[in-house]
Length: 118
Image 1 (cartoon, rainbow, N blue to C red):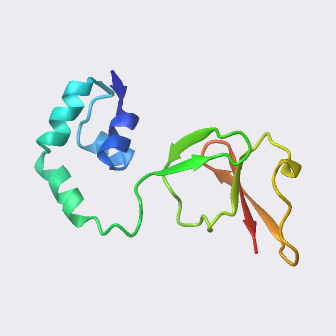
Image 2: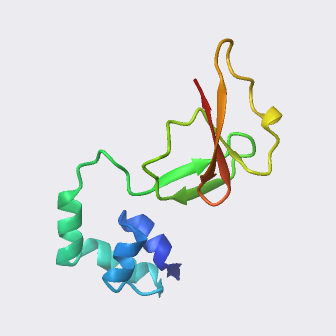
């Protein structure tokens, strides 16, 4: 069984859309395959409207330990130089290049800190 969140990720739709269109909280692999193979009209329309410029989901990976998480990207996220779990020490990342300053961005995913060197 897979969760509604996993189904939304695999169908490449927002979780809110999955809820709004009645995707169940749990479904089998076969049900998801059938749904993806023979999509309802709303999913066909959603896929047709997609421009490809903004991803629905992104894979976040810690540059220190490799922990990964799939999350919805936020408009306010800058381009990150590094991502790290919030429990890692900043010294575990490479130092910024000479002449660069470092900014930390909290609230990325469920427990990441985004690092921006500029």
